[in-house]
Every structure is written in structure tokens, then in C-alpha cells.
Image (cartoon, rainbow, N blue to C red):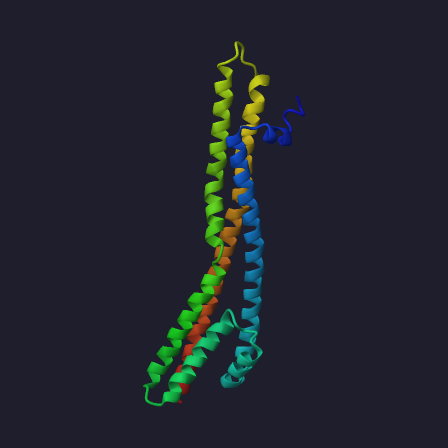
Length: 224
């Protein structure tokens, strides 16, 4: 009896619909874990790069020299470095024309930085919607497999004269496995989505604060 109720035995002997549901949930779980580790790596790197670039930016060095270093090294092609590059490049281009109002130069640099900020946020938010989808739909997919399995179990009772727990238990157990796997897929995805969404929002605030502070510095330069 214990062998018949083992998880592997129940899955292998489940109905095709329940097996399909379990397969989809396992695939969703593996995909979500891949995305979880990928976002963990990306967000950690984004935080580290932001700390390093802010340290270089606020060290008191010349901004033009910092821009040349960034362009030469190419190690700040994302995050705060990308926003700085976009803003300073546009600032230098517009200022070099000589016929543009000072505030128009600053506003042009701000627009370029806003575009760069939007691109950086798109990179950071990649796969978060997938985690949200897995977290919100997996329990319902698992519940569908459970309902289908239990329905088949009770349908089979119509062909016997005497119903017993031993007769119904395997079918119900295999059906409940679908719900368990659905929760197993959903819970990590929901936790990761909430955590990473908060991290992305905090990075967005840091980038936005840097953008405004940099724009203020550029404004002082054009008026100086």
C-alpha cells in the first residue's frame, strides 16, 4: 500500500490530464528558478555598479575627464554610468553648437538621461512579469489537475458495488499532488517577484535622484 502511494508511483499512474498538468507545473517551476537566479545576479551587479560609479562621480574630479574615462574603459555601459554618458554626451553636443539657450541645453541632456533611464529599467524588469504570472497562475493550474483527478476517482466509484478508502485513496492522492506542485512553483515565484520588484524600485529611485542631481550640476555649469 505504501509503495502504491509513493509520489513517483502516483505520478506515473496518474491520468494523462493530471500528468500534463504536473509536467507544465514542473516546467514553470524550473523556468521561474532560472529567472530568479538570473535576476539575483543582475540586481546585485546593478547595486554594486551604482555604488562604484557614485563613488567615482562624487570624488570631486572633472566631469569631462570622467566621461572620457567611461568612454575609454567601456565598463559603465549600464545603470548609472549609462545615464551619465547619455546626459553628458548630449550636453556637450548641444553646448558645442553655441546658439542654444543654456536651459535648453540642460533640458536636452535631461531628456537623453530619461531615455537612458527608461532603457535601464526595462533591463532590470526583464522576467519579472513572468515570475508574477507563474506565481499567480500555478495554484489554479494545480487546482485544475486536482479537480480533474478527484472527478475521475469519483466517476470510477460508479463501476463498483462497494466503495472503500483503499479504492479511492490513490486517485485522490495523485490529484492532490498537482496542487502541491502548483504551490511549490508559485510560492518562490511570488516571494522573488515581491523582493525583486522592491529592489528595482529602489534602484529606480537612486537613478532618478542621480539624474536630477547631475542635471543641477549641468545647470550650474552652463550658467557659470
